[in-house]
Image (cartoon, rainbow, N blue to C red; front, side):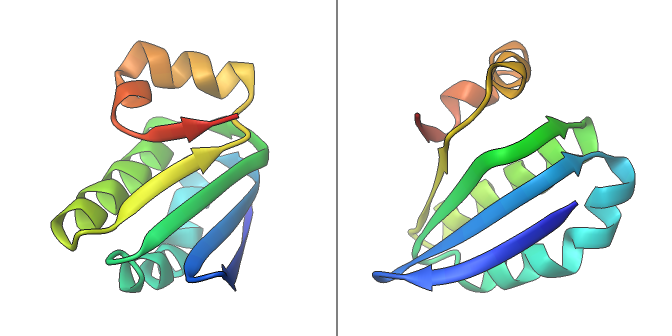
Length: 101
């Protein structure tokens, strides 16, 4: 699992690649701290190359959403695949995030 963080046009974009599973969630928590620092702005999570998300990954995402909401920012998820869309729908996450295809 890798994350590439890009600053562009006043927002922060994070490109997630691979599987956001339990092992990866522990490894990338530090990189998510960089996103927490930008939580008062718009954060776009690009799921183009995200293959899978586990409950540990979902916890990272909901933590980022909560931090962003508390600081007046927002989290947008774009380019979500059908498998992850199903996970988001089943867990109720689909209604918690602004999702753009």
